[in-house]
Length: 475
Ligand code: AMP
Image 1 (cartoon, rainbow, N blue to C red):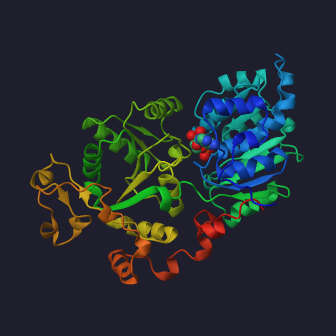
Image 2 (cartoon, helix red, strand yellow):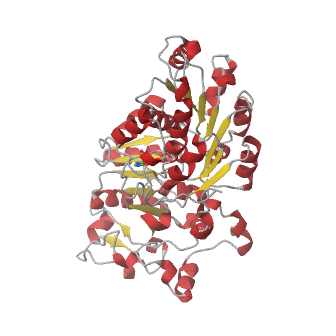
Image 3 (cartoon, rainbow, N blue to C red):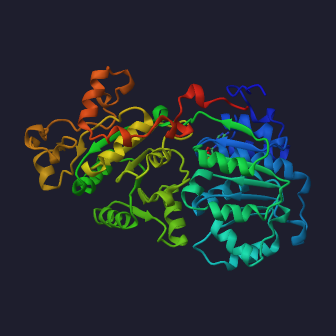
């Protein structure tokens, strides 16, 4: 198949039914994204698809639109549940993503009578049971709760014609492999399978091979590639100074919204309490919060009523907030790939974003892993210091990382110097343009893991392959 031209593509050239096209017009979708240009026509023909794409590339529409198109002949307004069997099953790793996908599918199908339902854990079963009894054609589900309903024989997947695995890599990371296999065993073998993953490890490839038949592989260069759209910066700072620096950052930048990642639920709670005490509208979302609390916090954040959302990785997965200007890694993630997922929350839909990571000396190895994965160092910036702390009263800024150095006081910047902006051009040098000697200096400042422990080329996920290799388009 030749590569479709994505540059001037238009939705109305894809041959979608007017009912769907009208919904896209209403939503203001004029041009399909590259993954949509590549995946929609093949999926409309009934082909299986392997999509290597992140959230933010438009993958939800890439799998939803062709499914809706192929389901349209079955659309009906009958009240009988029997006329609304489950025809499409979309599996997602988290409840947040399930809700988000449900909302998107609802939007795309707003001119059709299809019934859509998201089922996920952490909420009472009963409303889901009632909705399932009435008949649902498009089911968006997290694996655990779907299995619960399957055990109660409340869902029949024997009628499924379209199966989607969304963020398959994340589902594997979260240990859902057995659940996925149990669910897929209930779905007819004669079906269309659309498989999406941000990364393509050998394990993911094996799962895809076992589920798909002669798939079309669609791989898109990420529109929100960290290198392209996210201005990444590192603040080297001791752990106990992080929260003061975060507060200073929030106050200094006055950004409408900041998504802050913490490594633990306790850490997220404590940080949120601190921010609230300091007068910042903040809330935490993590898996110990009730679903009601999580939805409330997310909605408040999305609508702009909440300035700071403090999240753990699982809770934040798939969160889609239009024009989120900044992500802060209060703690670095344990796995370097999660860094890419985290900063992918900003710099979306063509809008530039910023990702600031607070890195303590204990986290320097994680940082080295991340920079290995990105294949470049992340520029360091000075740590903001709150003006109303004792330290901040004496000086406005401390040098990044100096807190643990002996020459601390000599490196401090006098208080009357202008506060450096995070977008200080001095910190935005493209590290790839630096001479090798410059890299050496950066390398020396980091405590890199011994060579044997560094990520090999083969381990670097397909996600971050050089663009030349990463965009073979439709094969
Ligand atoms: P996704 O990768 O599916 O999570 O989509 C990311 C964001 O892009 C969502 O807010 C979508 O509504 C938006 N989006 C997806 N496709 C298009 C398109 N063709 N035109 C405009 N916005 C889009």
